[in-house]
Length: 482
Ligand SMILES: [Fe+2]
Ligand SMILES: [Fe+2]
Image (cartoon, rainbow, N blue to C red; front, side, top):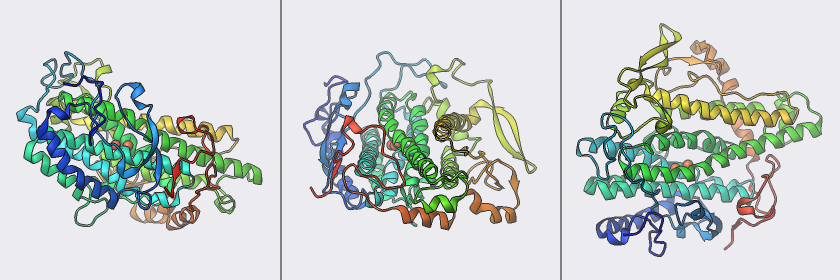
């Protein structure tokens, strides 16, 4: 058998799971592969399938394994199956089975629950590729285009990661689910992706950066909770996926940061002191900060819906079963079973938002969401520092968790971004002040012009501080005509 850190990179499917010794699973994956490539060509990045892209490929799961950069046509990318090293003697960290040896095989009694967790996670990965497929056509630079495609191929690899687990551990059911993952389509009327935010359009690059900042961060939280799983193969898969997810969030946070920087700079040069004077700011061809705030309001609220209902028996069951833990479960110091603990949850009671203590087991979605909100606050703080450094009198903020929600406690009400309840008429009247309006989207759309000269950037975004893989500023990250 291959050792954990050794990757067989020569075959069709690079892997460190010993596929060569596992004929059944290898055959299943090789059978699935052509359908995946068809899906990628149909639904992956549109228009650049023959271009050479400077991509990072994982060839190992140790830190040095990330060092391989090179030009590759996306359909030839080595997707592969990579698990983080096995921790000898690992035990189930939480739930009913806490302290028992971690499962190396699927525990029969939890088979259906585990399969569902894998399918839901797996479904988000190709969904985001589909959502982003038109963005190559309007990339503000070759640097950004390359980052988009890097995110896309890695989401493709995340699909492989879940499909491997389905095919290896779930037999015929798993093979059927793997096929279904290629069949659903983001935003499709009849066969949509499973979760709401993954059926939304990503029409422009500000949306893309917001998506990678906010929605990929949900991915990080979910993967972190699954990385604690008592089902060891899932834990190992997610631990490695988390190293890739970090880059996606970097793309989002730095992308929004570069937009903010460029806007502040243009305002300063033009002597505009009032950042809310959107008309004058837009006349400069940059994105006004109130529009950035509206996009935050939209993407943050859509992403909160991904955490599900605040009070959830499914989440309690998955925790009790030892399948899905809390964020950083291994760093927490309680009983890891939550037999008597409570947790505060925001609820709607007689038209008022109140905080209520509920059994902690039933509030695990809420807890993960709170950890997510804390993580998002960090990003807002860093963006605000950037605005402050540019002497601009504007501050960004996360909207209240009750704002613009379609799932959970606040579905039935509308609030302003501060969380004040609004009646239907006030919401209608003020909606366009809170969320991107048709005009805002049309303006953003008008800015989306491709920039293909190496080292050039669209006028609404600042260049990055450093290149990818320490490349110089004018590096040709994508050779469009290969
Ligand atoms: Fe992912
Ligand atoms: Fe991601």
